[in-house]
Length: 166
Ligand SMILES: CC(C)(COP(=O)(O)OP(=O)(O)OC[C@H]1O[C@@H](n2cnc3c(N)ncnc32)[C@H](O)[C@@H]1OP(=O)(O)O)[C@@H](O)C(=O)NCCC(=O)NCCS
Image 1 (tube, rainbow, N blue to C red):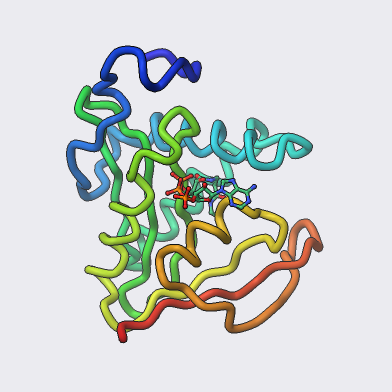
Image 2 (cartoon, rainbow, N blue to C red):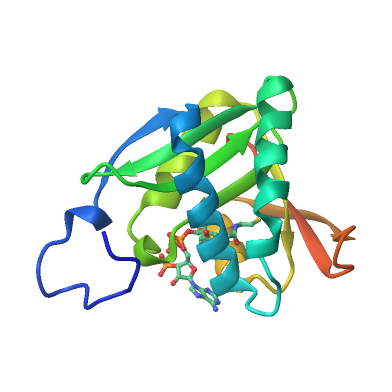
């Protein structure tokens, strides 16, 4: 599909429709890295995420080696449109990203449901305090603010957020 964002109410667009959440396989890696660059470039345009592709590939390899669960959200057209990483031992969610062409279409909610399935007792994460869309998403999903910190790479303020079952 095209990566451009067109009118959402014109023709039903299967590429914006979630089909399923699937466990990681290496064939998904190029699409994962592409959507990660696209989503973060839209969120923080001042940072060169193209230059960080290798960092993400290494990060995912490290996660897989350490038993962290990685899952993707696939559209009805078979495109990987989002991914999440969740450590079943700690409940730590290190990465969640959805391609901006499908923001607001339920992919992120489905990925978070997968994180909760893998870690039903707790999901915790760090988020940049000025990432208003992500913070709103987590609060909508029942997360609470449980701490504050700073991103070790950028020095920007972060929030620690956590979900626990009621
Ligand atoms: C964070 C992310 C996974 C969420 O997925 P999404 O599909 O955009 O999430 P949703 O649309 O379901 O929820 C976002 C909510 O924030 C709202 N929102 C959008 N912009 C906002 C803003 N500037 N301020 C406050 N709320 C905002 C949306 O309206 C929506 O709420 P609604 O459903 O009540 O209308 C996705 O935006 C993404 O990939 N972002 C880039 C990577 C990232 O930030 N990852 C998380 C790092 S911790």
